[in-house]
Length: 281
Image (cartoon, rainbow, N blue to C red; front, side, top):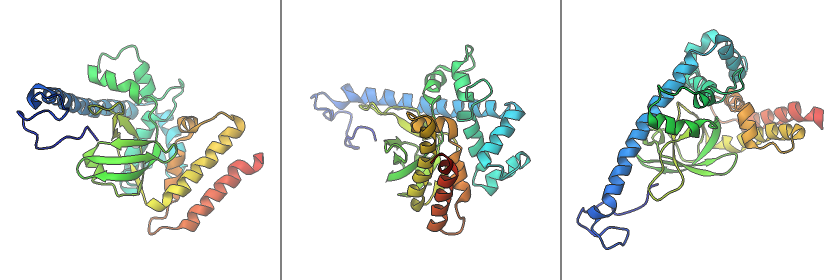
């Protein structure tokens, strides 16, 4: 994921870049500074996420209840929130992250956007303030695991846009399987040396789906996008995610818990198409 060089390069060896200088006099210091900055950014990521989730915990009860009903499609009552980490695979934590990043409050902003737009950010440290603007447009979305890097992360493909990105979270990669679908919030944090593309890390827990769900999930989301485009022809995936990202939670809710059931998924997609598009046909 970062620039490749020999892992056994000594301080006095010629630098891998071909400059003819010793490694210690060329790229070593730059790489040491980058690793130090990477560590500080990871710490800022953790502290910023905790601040954001603390804001979510103290949000207006009416907003939390309305968001809860949307996210869980009224399958559960708000009073059951504490039970959902066990009943729905960290469901309570996944909901709170969605509420902070995705749910639009009465002022027209998400909690993350409100924090980023706030005039008083004195409680944020400089690195948190650096990260925050990059997180404003992060939404719940699905990814497919394309390649695993043992103890070093994974390559993911956005299931909607086909864009590839790097999940640099080594701990998260230990829970992934090749080909599986992961639905979660990925936030950009640091950028590898020699690259213009950032590394991404999970903000909170993700849902993990079997590989056979990839195509039905994309078809399901596509129905919602098509319905949106009938009213707004220029609507894109970004518009759908900004307004209706909870649909991915709805998809998770209908998945069988014992074994794959392709016919059930096909019926669900067909029923969704009938419900959203038949009246406008």
